[in-house]
Length: 110
Image (tube, rainbow, N blue to C red):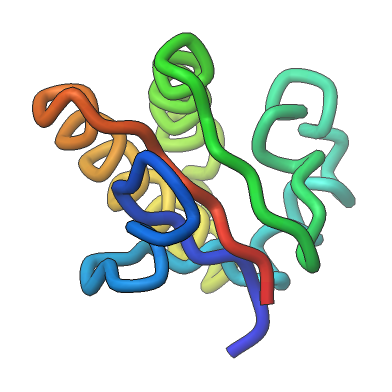
């Protein structure tokens, strides 16, 4: 499945051995871009699918707010809204766990 994998890690080496990941499917990213969410969700929608990114604590807090907004915005009974909500719930949990563990979040493109 094509997309971006999020995990709890402080660097690329830690990310390579991480077992717990959250997949940001290409279809969900495209859906968010097509529906003009890119401005408010830029931190998420602006990710390069072929690059890696290490999120700072401040950015992790922004990701949590984006996830909360996605959960209230994507409420239609469609498959893509369900995927977007499921992804945002999982990413929010991952972000909260990273903060609790005093770690960062790493996004690895395919």
